Amino acid sequence: MSVTRISKALGKIAEPPEHGARVIAISSGKGGVGKSSITVNLAVAMAASGQSVLVLDADLGLANIDVMLGIRPKYDLFHVITGQKTLDEIVVNGPHGIGIVPAASGVSRMTELACTEHAGLIHAFDALNRSVDVMLIDTAAGIADSVRMFCKAAQEVVVVVCDEPASITDAYALIKVLNQDHKVKRFQVLCNMVQHSQHGRQLYAKLAKVADTYLDVSLGYLGCIPADEKLKQSVRRQQSVIDAFPYSASAVAFRSMADALLALPVPVRSSGFIEFFAGQGLMAKAAVGGA
Ligand SMILES: Nc1ncnc2c1ncn2[C@@H]1O[C@H](COP(=O)(O)OP(=O)(O)O)[C@@H](O)[C@H]1O
Ligand SMILES: [Mg+2]
Image (tube, rainbow, N blue to C red; front, side):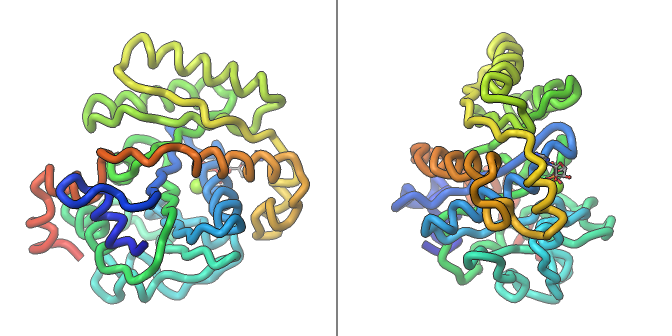
C-alpha cells in the first residue's frame, strides 16, 4: 500500500482503510525520554517481521534518526520544504529495508514552519511512490504546532513517559492539549527505562488517574521497556539494540511491543492527513503556498 493509499485510507473523505496501513506517532511531553530510540527499535522489529516500514523523522530542527542508524543523508525535509527535492528523492534506506525520511539538523527555519508549510509537507506524502504498511513518526517533545499536527494526523499516538515527575506532568499536558484542542481521544502509553514491569504499570496508573479524572480520553497501556545498558551501547554503535544485542532485555521488549502495536485494530474512522487538513481548510492554502 502506498502512502497515497495511506493518506486516503486515513481520510474519512475517501474509502476506509483496506488492510492495516497504520500511521503511528511516537511523542512525549518531555524530551530525552527515549522517543527516537523507541522509534528506531519498533521500526526494526516491525521490518524484521515482514512489514514495510517508513520512519518520518519529525523532530524537524533536531534530526537524529539518521545519526542513530549511522546514515548520512544528503538531503532532508528542508529540501522538500524549499522545493528543491521531492519526498521520494530524500527517502533513504535503513536497516531491514526501512525507509527513512530524514529531518534537518540545526536548521532553525524548520522549527518555525508556517501552518501552510506543515500542511504542504503532509500533502507531499500523497505523491510518495513507495509501498508502506506502517509509518512511524518520531515527533519532537512538547506541544509545538508540528507535534500537534503529526499527532493529529496519526491513527495511534504513543505517549512515552519515564519515572520523572516532569515526564508525567508534561505527558498529561500533551494529552490535554491534543484532546481539548484537537479532539484526539485515543492514546497508548509507553513507559520507558523502567526497573521492572510493575514499575511500568505504576507509572501508567499515575497518568491514567489524572487523565481519567479530568479528560475525556481513552488511555491504553502499550507496555514498558526496561532501562538497559545494552540499549545505550547500541546507540553508541549507531545500531538498533535489536540488531546489536538481539537477546537483551530491551530488544525482547521491543519485539513484543511491536507485535502488540500491530495487533491493535486499525480504527476505521480514524483522524488522518486528508481529513485534518481538509477540515482545517488548509489543503487549498497548501496548494497555493505550501511545498
Ligand atoms: N530503555 C532505555 N534504557 C537505557 N537508556 C535509554 C533507554 N531509552 C532511551 N535511553 C537513552 O536515553 C537517551 C535519550 O533517548 P532518545 O531516544 O534520544 O530520547 P528522545 O528522542 O525522547 O529525546 C539516549 O541516550 C538513549 O540511549
Ligand atoms: Mg529524539
